[in-house]
Each structure stands twice: as structure tokens, then as C-alpha cells.
Image (tube, rainbow, N blue to C red; front, side, top):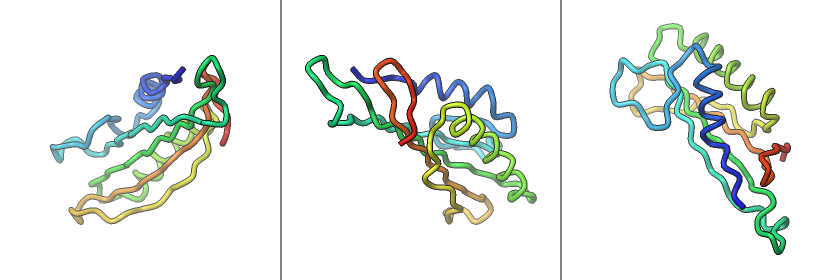
Length: 128
């Protein structure tokens, strides 16, 4: 059975992150900054499949942070701290990526974070 926690985690991010808008898709308007875009991937852990089905899934969440502020480094640092409080501290996921990346529009700063974990069929999260 696939463990579905995407909406729960997305809602928690929206509730806890006060420094940016949380979205599931990329912004079309410049007025939407600062914002984060959360992308979820949920794949089977073949080592834990038994006769009753899937027991655990690999969960990966990629977060794209966008800022257009003159103080973008400070703004992004605040947002990163809020994201980490939810995904690493609350959900106990491992942060596997935390880096700036180039953006097509040089007036917009972009930062990517990725978190990974293993989730059981009854929605218990384990570090990977």
C-alpha cells in the first residue's frame, strides 16, 4: 500500500512557513515572491514488499526557494530555517541537498533543498 503524506506535509509547510508563500507549482507573477515550490516523489522500497503489498516507500521532497528581495540571502536563510524545522525536525527526514542554483532571470535568486526519508504503510517516517 502506498503511503500518502504529500497533502499532510504540504499543509504543514503552508502553516509553519511564514516567510514565503508555499506552492505546488511555479509562480507566474513576480508579485508571488518570496515563494517556495514543493515537489514530492514517492517510490516503492522493493526490499519491503511482502504478500500484503508495499510496506515502505522512499519519500523525496524537493523544495525550490525563490526570492527577488534586495536582502535575498537573509530572506532565503530565514525560509531555509523554517523548512528545516518542518522536514528535518518534525518529520525526521534527511536533508540531502541545500545549494544555490542559477536561474534564468538573474533578478530572482533560487535555492534548492532536498529531503529524503522512508515512510511505512501506516505513515511512520524513518530517516534514510
